[in-house]
Length: 529
Image (cartoon, helix red, strand yellow):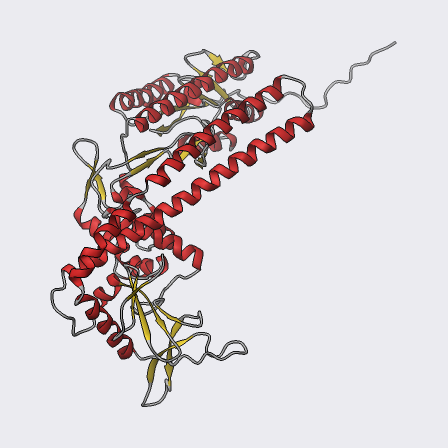
């Protein structure tokens, strides 16, 4: 075998070799804004700047930073994400950082990022562990160190959760003050009322009881230039609805409404019984009186079940009903004529085969009927106050419901424990799956019966509290009105009238908030409960 060498056709070029400087960046991060951590953060920035510039073979790219951001994932770390983007774009050759835990506490994020950088020839150096990622041992060491850091993050998360639940058990309340209208953090760490904001909260509750919808209230506040709890200029109906349902405005606190399902993603879900909740009564000063709060909860329930959601600004909207079951709506007759008229008419008048014969009404007719009915009640004040002493006491008594609720709650706890044991037994022992499924289904059905009844009891409690609050509100209004009323007043109408029923003969029956119906110039008849 013969090997012949073929010489090159061109002579070597005389080129001066120039060693390129390695482009180096530092990465610094602290997870809190506390003074001690901020000092550490400033020291890291200063250290990396001086360290990189002192090496003649390195070109200083910069120090990328994230201040006061947790490292359980990298999605919200702007400095980190910008640094990785620059490195992948070919602007960085080496990244220096303090430790694996400063870089990432999530094994998956850490390894994914290191491998992306490795593919582009970018190296990361962890000072504390003395690890270079392009070294043959680098990836194994990073996997081990990242796993340890991730476990540390889990331990911290569990400790924080444990501390929060101990605070809940002790009844300690903390609000997201920057996004919570009406309260500020007081000197003792507890919520204190902000008077100007509290007036807005009371207005929202008052308007809702006056029949206005969350959409109407949101539009009104936006038009008035009132700023939302989040500092925005436009109110959303969901914000109004959330405020109307929030028990903290009544001075109480339901704690642990949500809980964290994953310490890495920080994902939260609504607590539907997976973890305990704690109801703290009288935990802080109330902006809304308990009676008014109960009325609003009942009104929310009533509207949700009836589908009624008044949006009109007129006081009669959503309050006038026809004996046929329809609701009266505002109509304009001869809108383009000089004798234009606004009337109230049954919405079913011309719908379907049977035409409703109930006559239409004017504002004046409704106002006069209300004044006559209210003055009739006013003349019976002494009898009313005497009669309702016992009624209020009966409505306040929920001892029968409380006893039943306690028994049902215990039943739920027992069934949950039996279910947990059944699942555990099935996981550790070979059982007949048909028998196991039958037993499991029976426990689930047993739990659903108790849980459903608990919901019914709470609705009954809400109705009783609302009925009591309605009566008290009505009696308070009567006490403040010593003389007969001669002029229609919106406030009086809203606070005393539940609804008005129009009959075919034109008579109007005014149902007051205490449950008594009055047909003007006729005897007041209490309605059945």
